[in-house]
Amino acid sequence: MKSAARFSCDIFCRVVDNFGDVGVTWRLARQLAGEFDVATRLFVDNLPSLAKLVPELDVQMHSQKLNMVDVQLWQDEDAKLIDAELIPADCVIEAFQCALPNSYMNAMAQLTPAPVWLNLDYLSAESWVAKHHLLPSPHPQLALTKYFFFPGFEAGTGGLLRERNLFLKRDAAVPHVKAEALRVLIFGYANRALSALIAAIESSAKRTVITLPEGKLAEQYLQVIGAKPVNANTSIHIQPFVPQIEFDALLWANDICIVRGEDSFVRAQWAAKPFVWHIYPQGEGAHWQKLTAFLDRYCVGLETHAETAVRGLWRAWNAEDTDAIAATWNSFVMHRAAIEVHARKWANDLAKQGDLAANLMTFVEKSAKI
Ligand code: TRH
Image 1 (cartoon, rainbow, N blue to C red):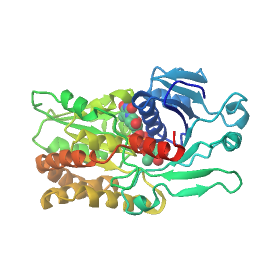
Image 2: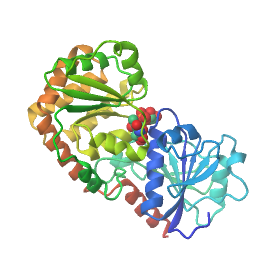
Image 3: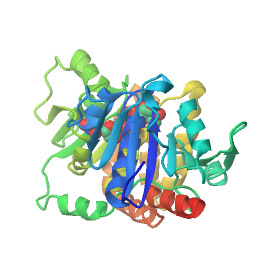
Image 4: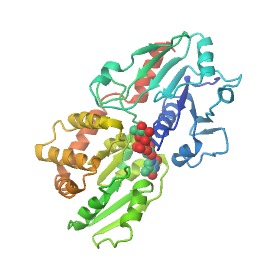
């Protein structure tokens, strides 16, 4: 990969479902290219998914440059990806163990020095993460070593994606006039407790504007509840999908944000808003452990009643516990001021650790002696 840039990086992404895989890799690619002067290529197997985040993308073009990132369609057959010209980059990032094409790995092994190879793993607040971060895994046949790069919430992990000047932009965007209505963003997976949540909001005296991004939850709202009139105090707005670059502004414009998955979960923390995490549900309830591990970190320093409110609503929403939603929502809203102060402190403290892209660059530079 010939370029005048500091060095080069190839990122591989398979879209498993939704927008998390492509959301994280596109954000990282944009930051490496834009802030670190890295010649970055993103190989992704699903252009329509990426096009939702980056509407300028032309899904008919298998290779194009956007936001200084070379975007390439990753087709299944090795041969179509690895033409004779394609030389692996100085740093190769396999996102979420998506398995690199064999021909590409063979080409990596031919290079001296071999590229620095990382697997960018899923985000978890569990304590094992720091112990596993950057553990090497030698390839059984080739002279290559893959390192496991774990994002995380404490020193010794890979940190979290956070662009330069994000907090400055956030703070400049905060409206100077206090809104009269409570603004609530609900970006989650389909949830049987949605009707109960909307009913709880409607029955409160507070004027509330709900924003529901298009998707499963909005469809559910339209099918199940949409026909019923919403009371005068509450309005619901179905929000068309915004480009990823505008997603933060959506969070900043709301007072309470329900988010999900991985990328929006992190952005809500940088937004410093009271939030609820709708965690991606895993088989055998494995996600509950992850959720609790995060809450155990997040709630440190939060006053007891506010902590009970946070834990209560997060549990009720994730368990789709229709019966518990009204009481836990009201309690969360009642403690909103304390939760908001805490959310800002959480964001500031978290930002003291280096951001993921910077940590990644430090590791690559050290390993490759670039
Ligand atoms: O979409 P997600 O649920 O993604 C994932 C995947 O399901 C993945 O397989 C799973 O492993 C992971 O979660 C944990 O949620 P996430 O990660 O928040 O990604 C959503 C992306 O969509 C994020 O980058 C923000 C973006 N977005 C927009 O750009 N515009 C919008 O209008 C909205 C609502 C979201």
